[in-house]
Image (cartoon, rainbow, N blue to C red; front, side):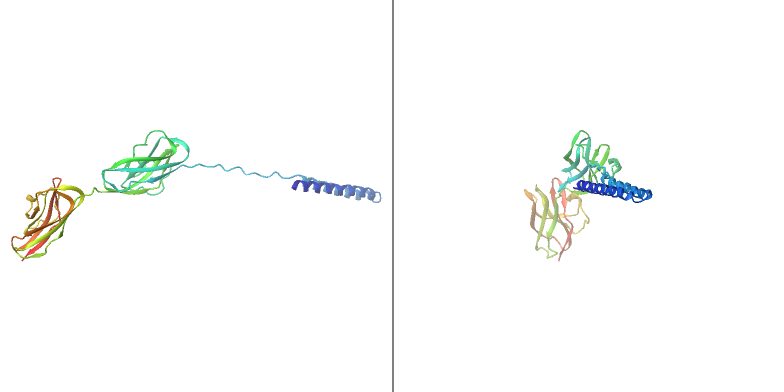
Length: 296
């Protein structure tokens, strides 16, 4: 439509030009040559305007912006509810244009490497001390989801990032953390005991053993008028203490723990007695904290 309008305007000017020429022929006969030159100049101006209408400027087309495809790497899952010496599973993914890579892993350690890790940062430039080995060398087509496993030997909080080397560049995920818990341990504690008793009266003690299930054959309440304060470790046997057995109801049998025990004792003499619960579990001595009982 725009082009049709231009040609219509052009023919309109041509029509005006013809009328002007015919009129000027008549006009020239009556006026001098100077007037004819003025009319000729006007005709040239009209012709120039008509020509300019038909000439359309070529539109400027911007050059297309190239699309840049960037690779991304991210941690999908980190170990959860893992105890030391337990088997841990890591999941991460790499997204972007199809290609083949030769190395990817999850790097982790007890020290954080915070901030944004750029493409020139190599694993040895970080504070991470451990890594998964399965995909550190080989040929792997990406995009792909990776799953790696490792045994974690120490209870601690760890910081981790997924890593890949792609086309000579180092790609890192954001840093995340996970916790490895200590192996559950059996514990023993006195739950209830008499703070004050009469000499030769029957005294009731209640104690419990918690933690991983196992079978034991020996647990007692021991006491002495001499204290052995502080924590007693598993290497300290009864013979290395001043304590004597007070409650001996569970010294010969088979007992499934965790379990709560109730036993009775008659305190042998007046004074302050220091008492503990003791159990033998897997040939190791498990001691409770020390309590005091006053015999009046």
